[in-house]
Length: 154
Image (cartoon, rainbow, N blue to C red):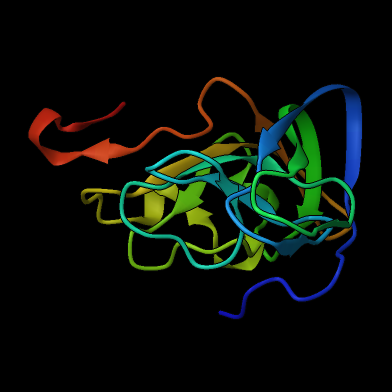
């Protein structure tokens, strides 16, 4: 799929926690983009590499002028993002296949539908689908990465 190139509809329910992180490069963090932590540290958007893990969601449009500038990321809470997932998927973990790791929620899949392999990652748990938004619990499961040698998400 394509990278996020415009703000998307985002809705939050209840309390959220946001935190500032050092950006890896000058970039635009669109509202609704999945923000990743690079294997070398630092927040980024775009196409990710093996070992990068999701950090959270950008809840607003943020233009980062210089590497090292702070980008605000929602790291905990219930966040609704546009989705094609169905109510039958509610309760399952949502994430990314290692071969399709981007900042676009449209690239996310239900973990239960993957043939699990190294570097597959968890974004969170899909709690509810309402009005074409998938409400994802961002928090303790976010950033889990599959390690085949351990046969588990860690």
